[in-house]
Image 1 (cartoon, one colour):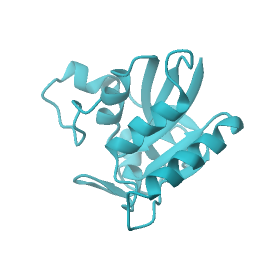
Image 2: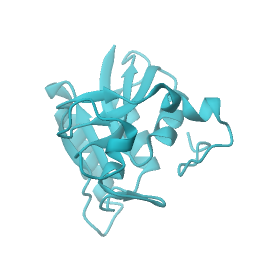
Image 3: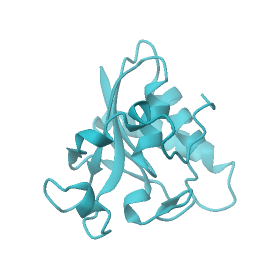
Image 4: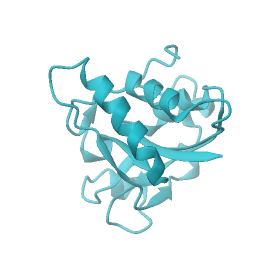
Length: 159
């Protein structure tokens, strides 16, 4: 199994979307690449921790390639917007691709460059190694499965 971490605004929708993709075997929402050790949701929403709301993804590369997964991710975000996705505003809602395997960088950069052709503005999605990941509280895990009418800025039908 391979792993990657995506930041795409509110983590509820990113997780719900990614968990529906064939070959994705596990998802977990959490906080990544900030300074505060073991943050809570209440800490992260203050916009002072440096953490992004993220979705950790474990996938079977025999079923879905990283390139295909990335192309699905690019489809659900606006990579040109700073610290915002949909109505969610703040640094915790920035977009990012946090890789675990250095070998993934070339594919990530290639898909970013391909996506750039679709935009006039520069893509500002962070692409960097995963420095830290802290799972979010249990009530955030699989939130939209537990709360089918819950808020989501992503069109979950666009698989």
